[in-house]
Image 1: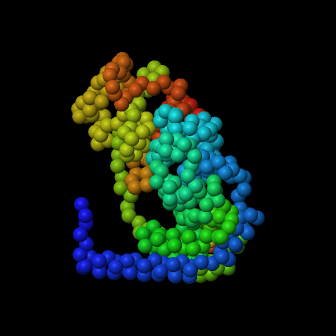
Image 2: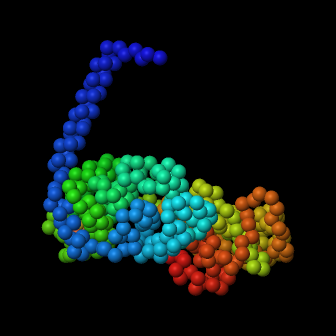
Image 3: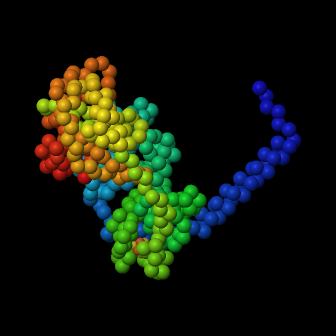
Length: 397
Ligand code: SF4
């Protein structure tokens, strides 16, 4: 249908265009004011001399390896990532092998690294790279950002390290450095402040050498400009750093106002029969999504109480008859938004029933416990219970 545009709309359209043009011009002027080539030069010079050059994912242009490391490093320290990264590459040496792997195997290799949505997205992303991009990671950060699990900063890092694309990163470490150097007086998680930081991050990009600059910002945040007690006396940005000059490295970046962390509780059933344990597949969404875990019950119920017995009989009816209950030591696990109190009970069954039909439950062999895709605290509990805590040493951090 032909669209009829009246005179008022034409006038309104042209005034919208003018407003947009004004906004773009103001943004350009701000970016020009923020530009400072000496900033990137100081970062690059320092990186070349004092930065990290021998991490397992450096000295390669292989976008698969770069991408894998960037995803693993989100919210996780380098030392914790290295063994996972190496094991992952041994099992899945190419994006094709990762895309073709069963999801249980991918989750098992991620088990212990936390933030499991990263593993699910990693798998989906590998499948998208193979199906939509012929197994080749795009070099344009805007296209990378459309893939599962890749945000703006991660897309820029992958593009910069793999293809030398000139794109700005702004992860938590970089926000901390910027907040201190430029004296940002508001919480950097606020949308408006974050937008300003992005403008600055783009304006400060060097004309060449984006790889060393990007690595330099990461290295500064991880090794000198640390959250606590930054090493300002060795910092190449000390001369220009507002936080250092004003003695406020403890105050900047401004922290989010604290709210009390809510607490939840759950009872978990450890049902071991001979050489098998009853595990339940968790739904894809929610905490520990897609992993195996222990069957759960209402934490408010107390053993010895009729309601507890009834709930337990219901929970185990398809698997055997419970004949004894032992309360184990409770413990807590803290997630980003809440704390989970876990009350484990060891249940003995008088006989194990074969599981019939489609179910989310499974009898899992105990000898495979160390490689089971379980959440780290549950794996820790179970390996301790079956007397193999040593297996934890490099599997669970
Ligand atoms: S001078 Fe200190 S606070 Fe400022 S950027 Fe360097 S390490 Fe961080």
